[in-house]
Amino acid sequence: MFSRSARRGIFDVRCSSIPIWTRQAQCLLHQGSTGSQFQATPHEIPPQSATSSAASPSSSPSSASLERLSSRPQRHGVLANETTTTSSALDFVPQTRNHVPLNKQPVKPVFTHPLTLTKSLVSMLPHLTSQPPHYISAHLHARPYLLTAGDHLRLPFLMPNMNAGDVLRFNRASVIGSRDFTLKGTPYIDERMFECRVRVLGVDAEPLRIKEKTKRRQRHVRRVKSKHKYTLMRVMDVKVKTVEELLEEGAHVIEDGAEGCEHSSKVETKD
Amino acid sequence: MPIQGIRSVTKGRNGVGAFILQCKRLDFHYCDWAGSSRGMLSFLQHYLPSFAKANPQIEIRVSPRPNKHPVVKGHYVNGREKVICVRKLEKEQILQKANLLKEASGEKLKRTKKPVTSLNESVRGIWSPYHGDIKTV
Figure 1 (cartoon, rainbow over the protein chains, first blue to last red):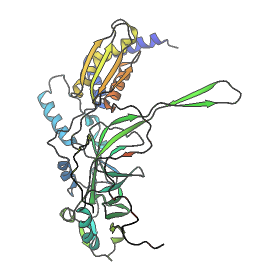
Figure 2 (cartoon, helix red, strand yellow; figure 1 turned 60 degrees about the vertical axis):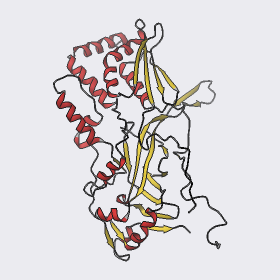
Figure 3 (spheres, chains in turn purple, brown; figure 1 turned 45 degrees about the vertical axis):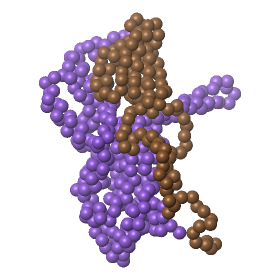
């Protein structure tokens, strides 16, 4: 059995036996994995740039409930530039997702069928799109969150591998509505019909909870402590795409009675 | 639809347009003599340069605090500060604590039950019995 000092001595020896460059690389890798690279969003980059790129039919969303839409390509571009300039130097600029292997990167969404709109939906959708503000009932891990633009969302769990400043797109919604009109999904609205983006603000914790556990006829009281962490988010925009945008992206218009229309969404008016 | 007047008061909502990290400064205090600062000293040597480089928007101060335990202190945009004592912690644990302070919002920890907090008015309005059609039961 080792004493603590002996173990520490072994640890030190092991650390010091590693050459300097590998140790530095380790540090930097560790830094890259946990110490996240935060980049403040400059004012001049509107979220619509990401919107337009994501909204193109070539990059259509997947069945996953989240699509990571932060400025990854830009960051990678930046990284490429920097490594070419300072490839010989040992000073390394850590990046967030650089260590993630290619097969674990977020999957680009693939759709087999184009979006189909019924004629009644095409006739009713302009009423909804032209009446801001909108609300959305976005589903995440089978829980609905009723959101409007600018809301603060504190998820009831800690979302892993998130950094402050990341932008997510919620792509599962059951209801989108305005004051007088509601677009209902059966059970979910097609994710190509709307856009809902949230930005990760950081991580919050609850106050320490102490639960006192007792046994009978014993004076001993066990105190169980727990302190959960939660992810904080801010809803950036809630947007319903107009009919023109949907048709540009390759949506098909079908008759009301045609097959396949039972899966399409419907716009309802308020009573 | 009711007539909406121009709202004069703007509300600060970080992250809707631009995003600003709430942690603005991190202070690292250490003691040269005491053994509880050993992990802190190696953190300052090995991890702090890359941490500071990865977070250019956070001001980082390192200062001695003799005859006291090592401490990491975070200062936030809302004026509050969070202090974590890192006595006898290894350098990786201290890095975790620094990341915790970096991602925190600076608010006092509260237990909330509702996930969504909204400053907006209700989108669909408040129901009124005097408007709309006559309801038949």
